[in-house]
Length: 341
Image (cartoon, rainbow, N blue to C red; front, top):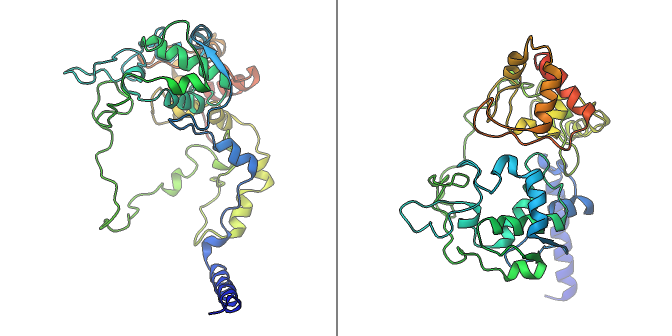
């Protein structure tokens, strides 16, 4: 076959495929990510250091950052409760009483850098600069006696580190707890897989707006997304017109209500409105403060400072990034009964 004939054949196939794609209901869903969105999401760091930005930080600098932003959850010396302990246990994994902590189970220091960078501090993820993350990584490793107190980490030195568990990493343990069993026991399916999963339960219509209007909720990275849950769910395939309504100016210019704030400030990661997650529900908090003369100021101080002991042992991190006006809006909403209408 000549090159000319081959070119015509390829062109014909492309035309046929394009015509077929136009009939697919999912063809109108989504859009191409912008360079800014890709840059915001493309932040992973590999074990060999690929993806690490420039910067440097010392153990001493990391100690100051840790005391201000991390100790409330992880303990003054990384010895927080079972769920949040990050230091100690080095060399214990092969014993009868393994203590699985950040210091004992990680096999690459770059993994720790990556996790701090993308997920910490809990109430304000992605708020740390690169040098702050280097400093915190150095201090966390120092807490487990993996690096000396005069350590300064940067792109080159962090890759050169060999952690005690470099050659013995396993997945036979709980992801979070220091002495738990494996979280997942299933085997990844590559052939002879079971039938496609069938949805056997879904959120009932009466609870569609139970956690606030999704159209008013925002994400820290990327554009706003979310269905208007104050309206009935659309029937039939998700049409382009419905997508356009989701991404309308109404969504983009959503009013900053308490329902929005409790998600922006990560409150809803631990607190539900009526159902418990980790901490008390917003309505339980409202009930406890009912009739207390200084309820508003007490709750504002509690949210701003964090702490533990009132509702259990799990600590609540301090809410450092919320403005006074935002916290006041949230507190007033809670004390009014955390109503969702």
